[in-house]
Length: 138
Ligand SMILES: [Zn+2]
Image (cartoon, rainbow, N blue to C red; front, side, top):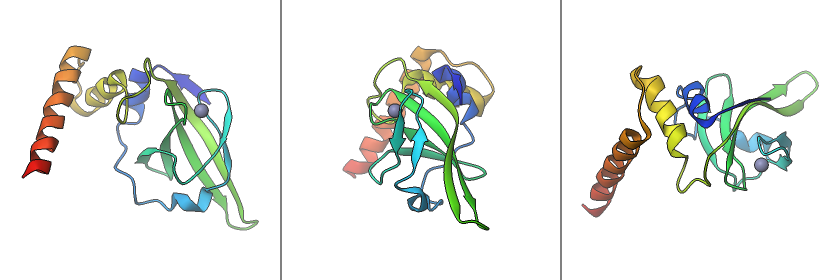
């Protein structure tokens, strides 16, 4: 597994889409190597943050500070399922919601093609959050 800083990790996973398209339940009970250095069993309550092309997805460590890109493999001839860890990162802080601010900055950089400061990213996230709150209220 390649370990990246959280900003670079955000850039590399910016192509992700919201979850729910992949049948990740096929892989429950298998172990994967987490960016935190331990192996975890993949469980239904684990946080899958986004889905990437080629049946890869981003999983949050139960400890809250690490993210791992996992490629799910299923060899149909011998019916062997595997979770292969490809990329990992450690967030600077335990993430409050979905991800850390540096990770978000990396995502925004990849999406917009320009650098984002952490202040700017934070302001953008707050603005988005308040829009979500408004929608919830109405
Ligand atoms: Zn972990």
